[in-house]
Length: 124
Image 1 (spheres, rainbow, N blue to C red):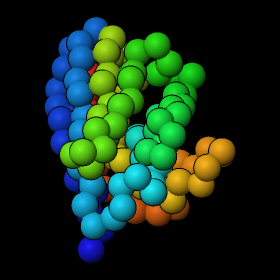
Image 2 (image 1 turned 60 degrees about the vertical axis):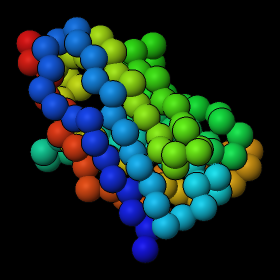
Image 3 (image 1 turned 90 degrees about the vertical axis):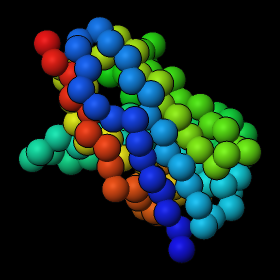
Image 4 (image 1 turned 30 degrees about the vertical axis):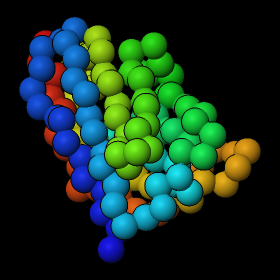
């Protein structure tokens, strides 16, 4: 059984930092790209960041570029999202998702496995 478990969410003041973790099990980690998505009530999921576990390439949405950093520890089957300089508009439920990682292209489409989400709330 494939499981993705997010952790690290919470309440933080604007300008603060949080580190989210996504621990994966039941899949061959190196064969997957892991994406972070976020969702606020009434809106679709927004892609935030993506990392390829096969070649280490990364992607960031313009809204988080320069503030968020995605990284992967393949030995622990865990992907992290370091979020700095948080803003109230970053408030959302954050999910990680695993998609099959095809070489040479962007793969974080949220079409594979999803975690249950972790709430991030940034107060002004």
